[in-house]
Image 1 (cartoon, rainbow, N blue to C red):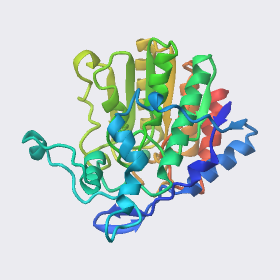
Image 2: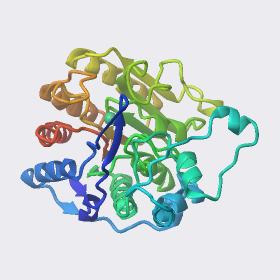
Image 3: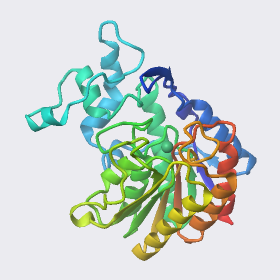
Length: 343
Ligand SMILES: [Zn+2]
């Protein structure tokens, strides 16, 4: 299996992170990618840096104003008096403000709040090149899939919490959505996104909410107790012509292999019924029993069985990396998943 990875993705090294009222070090660190890369090398997979996509390709999913913010916002931030090292919002437009005519301001502090959902997506001087390269990998993986193969995009930073015009939860550009949209552009009539990260893939779902050509299935921990908190419930099924093309499968905290695999199986049945031509897998490892987030309790065997089950769909797949923060185990989980997927 072809792997897409660019060393420039290591340059993004966020520091700021806020959790339960405490300032902590960000755990979406470059070492995550190094651990996954090492696993790919040990598997003997071909690893390639993808060519950077033209801006127009990013605009198939993201708005021009948002892309400008991601690319140029940090320069404006640096011009602020007494500024921190990274863009972190300290205000977001409240729904009441938006209902009363609230609009995008020209100042970078207000823009930061407009274009981010939370404090978990700090933007530093090297964020743009890294997220651009991660997106390039996902788009290159989509091109492989369009030709009938499967590929793994070592996308770091991840993407599934990013909306068309909003960063959040360590995510900036939605790599999986870009891959799905690219597959549509390259001729797939119906694309399914299967998100097995332990967090709801809210950004991807939001991007395709009113579409019937991209089915979004997300298996994740109960949002009542877990990021992204407000969405990810079973009754969110899509809107307009997209009604019925979103499937959320939230799980109780502590769900282990059996319940997790059953939900993935349910998603697979839905993808089969949808008659998808191509698949995008948002692959997170934070459902692992060894994760610091400890929401779900999936074993390494569970990830292997998930790989086998998803591979059993026999669909060309762009496997796009999302979360997973235990650096000591994510390489092994990737190896188990990809080996069984290809089996
Ligand atoms: Zn996650």
